[in-house]
Image (cartoon, rainbow, N blue to C red):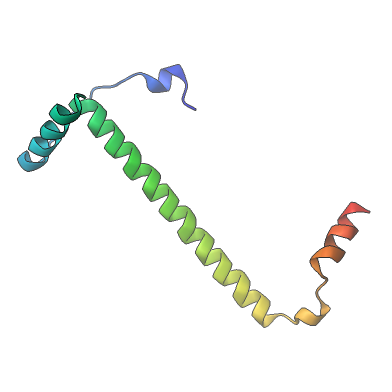
Length: 90
């Protein structure tokens, strides 16, 4: 969650292609919202999507690295998950 000071709005200069401004304006008229809210939501969505993409990309890389490491390791000497949990509990 964001603090009150983080929610304070700051004016930012922005240049957009005319066609995009026209699309935004048509959207704002259709849904009775203002241009700022549309742009804020679009930027927030984009950033969230990029963070998710980075997370899953890193997760995928880590999974492949783990699989590669496990494939190269003698797994016969590895303990079962139940044995590890039992060891940690005791």
